[in-house]
Amino acid sequence: MDYYFQMYYDDLPIWGFIGKVDKEGKDPRDYKYYLFEYIHFNVLYNKDRVIEINAPIDPDYLVDITEDEEVNAVFKYDVKWEETSTPFEKRTDKYSQSSSVPHHQEILSCVMVLLLIGLLATVLMRVLRNDFLKYAYDEESGENLVETGWKYIHGDVFRYPRFKSLLAAALGSGAQLFTLIQYSSL
Figure 1 (cartoon, one colour):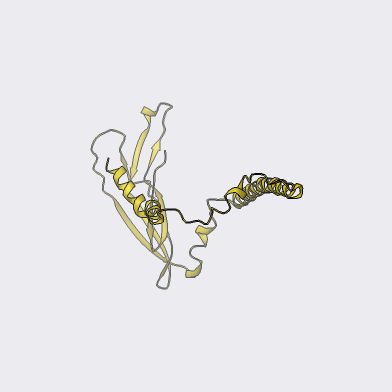
Figure 2 (figure 1 turned 90 degrees about the vertical axis):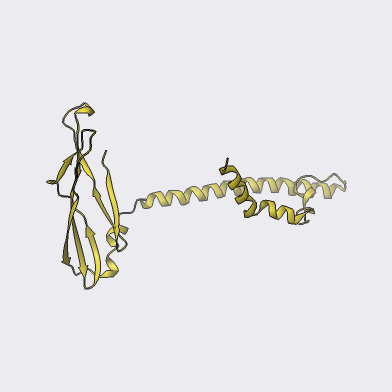
């Protein structure tokens, strides 16, 4: 149960722990909970640009918050400025190396997408091949059978619907927004 804070200074993230738990026994009722009161900000700069910022916690300044009662905590901080030779362009390199998604997971996702596309293409090709074979057989035999499948509706695909303005209004974002407002007001 570690709680931490996250702040930003000049678009650089700062992380630190809020407190600590002393687990002196196996029973959670015997645990001691402490809150850190003092934060040291170490700011590394190059000329007039902030390159890196760290926030180590001072474990000597603790407030015991184990009991469920009001506690007087005085939060303090100090800032230490140190010059560094790291250029401004490389200040985010530290954060980009700690990617939360490893590369093998990205590759696995791409492979999964390709497999699904291949499966869909295979199913679609089988359906179309069966339709083409059936229609080719019908034309050779000279029989006029009733059209089925996609051949039956191919003329209706580009036909405008009746009341097309009403359809556009019903499917548009205005109607969806109106429905959302009505639903959320219930």
